[in-house]
Image (cartoon, rainbow, N blue to C red; front, side, top):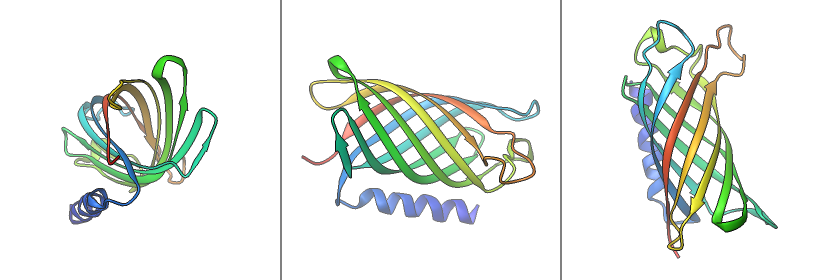
Length: 165
């Protein structure tokens, strides 16, 4: 639990920095663990996405961080890369790859190791004020870096809030 608190504090501190931040996403969703005995449940997610370091045509890439908390007490914190492909009429597709640390609240929700990788794909719509809404599908697993790799899938409704000017 001490590790989880330290990870949450580090992510909170990073989010407070004014440098290069572009957007925060807040999400509510549901997670389905692959194990039959696992405790599925609601989740809350916060992603912090930096200003793009690469833009070409409709594609942009940026660094980001994620914090996900399950109603069961499971916590994931990760950092990685996010890409956005802009479609017509302010629609977009977002994807991300964020390795990080996972702490389960019970043995039933053990994903095989503390090292987990979250992959995410979302479809969203941006509004004239810069905010957006998206529906995301994500998967967390240790990518078979451990002997056991059950994984968890989540669906999340996300609200994107632009930062700065």
